[in-house]
Length: 285
Image (tube, rainbow, N blue to C red; front, side):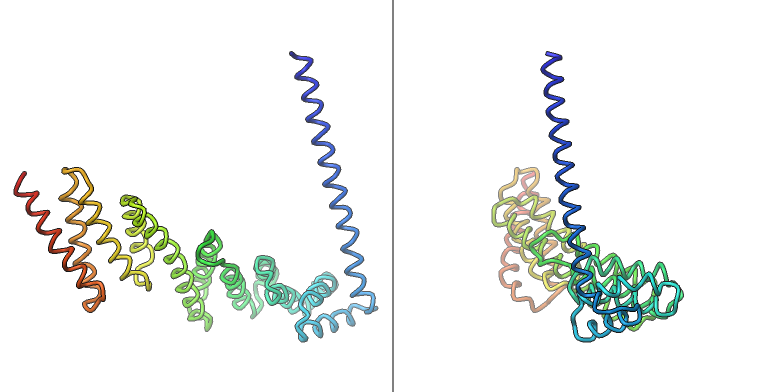
């Protein structure tokens, strides 16, 4: 048994070595190609000054990949000069304008770290947060990036409360919160439609708590009332009073939120029936 185990271990070790060698070989091949690609652009320009001017020209024309490549190449040559500030900022901005948002955010943060006294630090901080916002996916995908964007935008607002970018940042946060609310609303409705009343109740409650005042608040309350009412009807006797009461409370909550809600006629009937059934259950105790 020991001999067989040793043979298996040797095979596994050889396999890992082959995988590692293949990976190294692949990386080496990629690394060999990159300098060739860089040299095709940069070999036209013989001096750092010529490369810097070319980078700015590419940037102005909207050729952001070429601009970024040249900015990256000349930055170490200008790092300690006054041009270094501008080069690194435009380098980060080139990534953003090319829709490579996470790389742009990284380089904007690097800019803030390297030039903390620059008058552009505030703008770089805003643009870094904006990159996370722009990287936020459609509502039905994983929303980790949206939450990260909200955190970065809130950090910016707290750091620069008087900034002219604050109003825009707040608008971005509202948009992201509406997206998150939409995702949670759709999940809650899905649970309601499939009769998973407890899960639906949790999602609707969390949505109203976490994202108050969104366009989904009114409809979420409407579904929450229906969910509580149907949940009560299908509950064991000991839970019915509590769940009918939950439906009644949410009816009153919807009425207080929007007195002219299109859902109120239906909700009023559910509320009247919930009160009637709750009272009957209390009488029979």
